[in-house]
Amino acid sequence: MGQKNVQFACKSIAGESITIEIWKTKKKKYKHREAQKDAIYIVLFNGIPSSENCSGQKPLLNDKPAINKFKEIEKEFFAGSGPWIKFSLNGNYHEEIQSQENNRIHIISVNKNQLRKYLEQEKIIKPLNSIFYNEN
Image 1: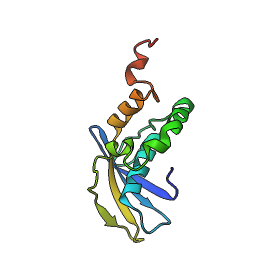
Image 2: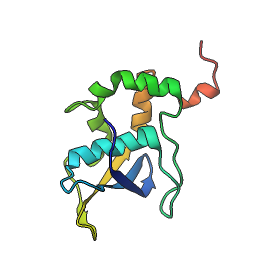
Image 3: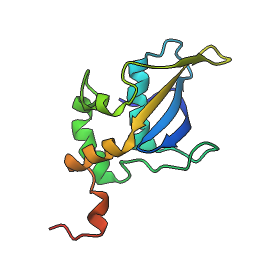
Image 4: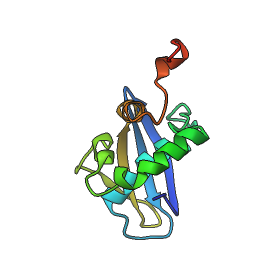
């Protein structure tokens, strides 16, 4: 897993979701399902840089222990209809537009808050409130 030759731009952040424009730089056929997985991967590992449309967002997996824990479940997470599908808000619906280079650009919304909660439940990351409470 991982997004080779993928470029993206944040289109918006609203409520619990981040909407990303995502496209491949070298591959003409870019399946929507692949774009959905890549968008989730970006939220997990890369984060979203600040832009005109969006404030910067750190990756959900932002330390070595969390990354290593996720790597243990990554294959199952991104399998066929694995858990990843719950976090791509537009399911089967997608909007495709053509760029000047004739590459497909997919518009993908990722429910970042639900993805974060999933990672907390799986004990991959600590809950946000753990900094306020001493967990024993």
